[in-house]
Length: 369
Image 1: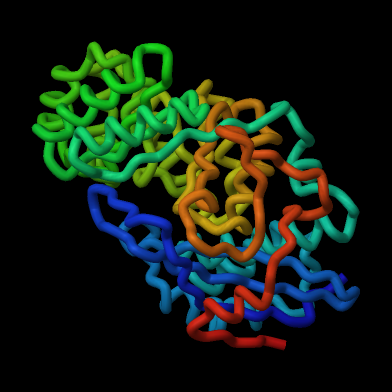
Image 2: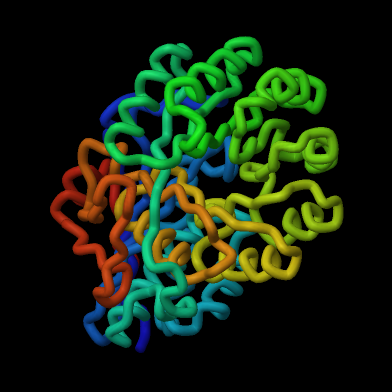
């Protein structure tokens, strides 16, 4: 089997409501879609969701890199040779993880379709019986966040994740308001997205909310400050999760060496796809660290990839595959029942991609063959 063409689409997906985190507010999100065709006629789809604040990539830099520098190098290669494909991409460009993730996911979609297997069977088989997702709440006034959280619990969600980080004093009120609104039996996850920046501010906030029984605090300090994150972990009894500070093997080694976190948040867009993500899971298992598969708020394509990984690895105890719930339009359909994402056993990703929608929402496209 050989890759005979790769088509790259630069698209923009509209959100149902603004998505507000510590470092930015989004009204739509850029998505780079890859359509990979083989000489056997099998077509696989992948997705890259670049974020300049996290991956260092922009919408058009990712599109141009795939169109001009990466895709051409992969023509004639076998999608099953996934390690070789990653070596080719790494030799062509340093880092650029969301661009590589788009190719990686498309390869796994092809592999699954070629073998008649869902992607999770290519990653180890189904180890979890189901996937539950949290309800994610953007940065808003405390009373609005509390109201959304209470409504989510009524709708059947058992875990609430709130975004904080724009103002430490208000963040304390947000955490307390949400905990009061959802009661003590619902899981509360708090993500500062680097907004508290340093150890001193982080500890000032955490000391005021220690009684709120947070499941964990995610990325409270700046991404590059792994030493600071380790200090936070030493000073608090609240479990600490690293997100933006963890991309690949280099950061994973330092996190383990410094004992900087209790938990890690793996995102396909940060590490470069399913193949490198599996390496991070293996390292986490060696170090006894729990894993979450996070999301850059991706369409059904990359969300399905993350879901297949989540259900295939025992060390992955949590996932945030909620992107499709946040868009007013999507390229395919994933099925959610209350707080559960149903992972299909159809071959590949199991997403019936509507190419007409991809082309309609595309602002630019390139065919490489």
